[in-house]
Amino acid sequence: MDIEKQVAELGAKLIETAARNTAGAVSSKIQAIKAKRNNEETIQELEEIVNALVSDKNELVRIAQAYEQEFVAQQISKKDIEYITTKFIPVLKGLLSKPLVMTLSCKRLLMT
Image (tube, rainbow, N blue to C red):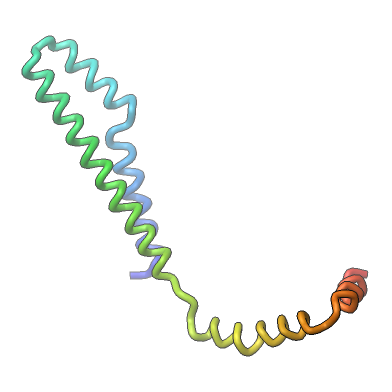
């Protein structure tokens, strides 16, 4: 599975989980529960809300860890390493070996 598809799926899960128990939805549920005025039933329903929130929190943690794994899994390819070692580093060494004044002079020439 390519990384873009995996990230898109994680995004969809994130939206779904975040929307499931918004503050407004939880507040509405609590108000409805309090209106019943049955202590045992109120306690049970509040426990269900808390359990759902804990479950959602755990799901969000799993999604965050999956995002982290996807982005950590991206590595520099052999081609990238080869370019850096054969092209970039020699140019950088060349620039660093020249006096600063000459480097600044070349920069001015390039900017005009």
